[in-house]
Length: 402
Ligand SMILES: [Fe+2]
Ligand SMILES: [Fe+2]
Image (cartoon, rainbow, N blue to C red; front, side):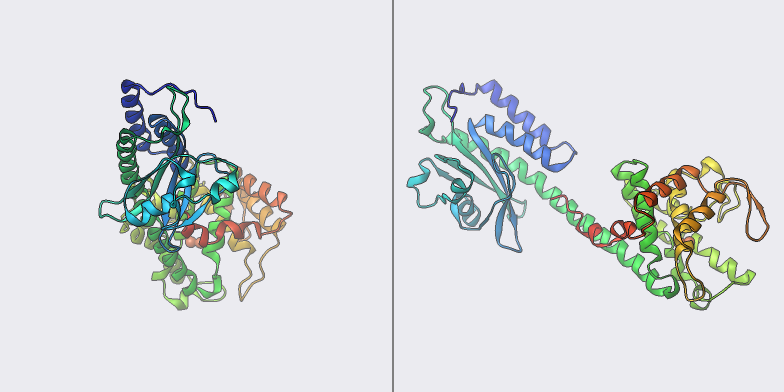
């Protein structure tokens, strides 16, 4: 072990503490940010390693969220070892001669080939006193006389405890945010499922349109946030069908004019229903995007007859996914088209064309979006199962950040 570190000056301590606070309150991906903050904490108390344990309430265990020097996640029972004791008793535990302490569990050392001498474990609690995890420093390095086993001091405990308190507030918010996200997503999925259940003839349509839209968005290299926005808009795109009478929604064959108008009104219904949901700032555009899946680039679509650039990329993606899914889907009254045939049909819609009813039309769909879909299908040898993974509800519900 390298014990040759200089003691940390007071000015440096203050600097590290401020930096820790700054890092932990920055809104970036959680794990790397926590890892960086932990490196600051390590320097502050002159430790060799730090570990951040989080509480898994269901299992009654602590698991290493970030463990410096650990390759894999480690789990311990609450009450087991030094961190487990800090967790069970909600108190700071300092052990400066690990192998002679009854609290120390040498199992992790045995697995990682490390030699623990001193440990400082501080419980992290939420504002209402619930245990969130344990923040732990391992092996105090004493730079002044190269003596590794002088152990953690009261000052270290104090400093480390204030960092644990900052981390606790932050992690509590992150856990809360995570729970809210999952709650919101399960709500969205329930809405979408209610549509697919109502419209038996097109069951799974919503799910597959979601899978196709997400795959195209990813193929186009859009940001993670944009992909998520598209996913949710796709999940909800036909939600307005909930307000269409079953005899129209499930009518086999063609609709008369009145029925067609009623059917088309599902888009406005979608927009109006979704506008009632209090979406977060990032998702505020969802009702608008979801309401664009029947718009066409030449302005002949509905409900607004938007043209060209008036339809953003998100809406164009949904439109292509919706058409492609409808073309390839087998329904009680029609056999679904084969993939090459459906793609050819979409290609025709990327330019001025005469449709199958001899109607002369302009460009309906975005050729770049169709190209992206074609690339995916080519790679997958026209196997539509590629869209199933992206269309599963479960990953949406498991999208945990912690
Ligand atoms: Fe629709
Ligand atoms: Fe649709």
